[in-house]
Structure formats: C-alpha cells, structure tokens
Image 1 (cartoon, rainbow, N blue to C red):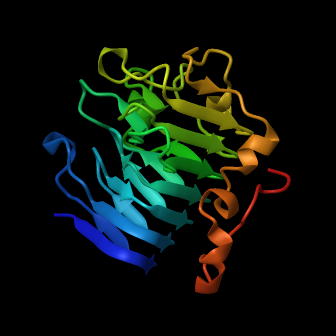
Image 2 (cartoon, one colour):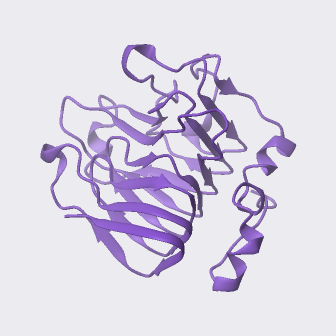
Length: 237
C-alpha cells in the first residue's frame, strides 16, 4: 500500500508517517508518491525499502523529515530540496546494494533535481553489521540528465569511497550532473570519488543556486506556511 499526492499546488503534510510494509523481499514498493507543485512535508517519516519516496514532479520542500530505505529510496523527476532531513539506510537483500537517490531528469532544460542540504545520511541498526560487504552510494542516474546536489550534510562511514554508482551499462555518465559541497563526516571524503565527466566541482556561489530560496523560489510560498525554512546556505555548517 502507498499514498499518492496528486494536486495542482499547495499541499502540506505535517507530523505524519507514510509506510509501505512490503519489505525488501518485494523489491520495488513505493510508500509515498508526490506529484504536486509547492508541496511541503514537515516532520514526516517515510518508511520503505526499495523506492520509498517517489518525487514524481514539480517543486517539493522536505524539512526535518526521516526517510528510510535501501535501493533508489528517493527517486523521480521532482525539483526537491531536503533540508535538515535524515536519510537512513536499511539492510537490503544479501545480493543487493543501497543507493540513496535516483533522480530522473530527462531533458537538459528541465528545472528538476534533488538537493540534500544539512541532512544526515546514516545506517539503520540492521544495516551497520553488513556495511562492509553491502555498499551504499549517494545516487545513480535514473535518466540521461539526472541532477543531484548534496551539500552541507553529514555523511557517515556507510558511504562508499566511490560515492556514486553507474546505471546499467554505464549509461549517462557524461550527461548527469552530480555535485558535493561543504559536507562533513567520514563519508564526505572525495579523494576516491568516481571521475565521470558529469561529476561537478562547484563553488560557494554555484551551491547557493541550489538553496531552496533560489532553486525552488521558496520565498514566494514556503514562509507563509509557518514551516521552518532556511532560504540560503547555513552559516557555520
């Protein structure tokens, strides 16, 4: 069972949970699908394994949320900013690996992308004992122009040194757009990251373009909801 949010604009969920209880054995099992412009999720939890959160399309803002999963557990073609959220990796099947994001931008002109800002990526208790043999990646390109930015976030030691995982047959490695900026923790070391053409080295000015105030034009619609919101970069993080 999953929840689908289909609306033109201005949906908000607060202090509630969304769950798909199928388990890892059932493979793809969405807990929440969001197709709504100016959608806000505040202090919510999304529980699943593979494909937990389907950020299908339009602008979405997630604040202080917890998202649990295994494979591609945040995926879709939304323009989504996750601020102060926790991404918790669960134990998958023994023959699987874990991937936090699978963003699906299909056209270069699409304004979509995933931004994880001041988030924490860590492992669940059932995953930690197997982290050495079951790798966790920050993301992989679901579509040709997949775009993901992870910045000012805590990356625990579950993140493999390569950081990013290719899609089947090494598709889209030249056309994806992936960046890390100002992260911290043992998983944030970029020394041994993959060297694909699509991996970006961005400046502070470029990172600012992916804050919710700019990327989502958030000042026009987020503050009036009363949800905590930082428009730009977090100072001192």
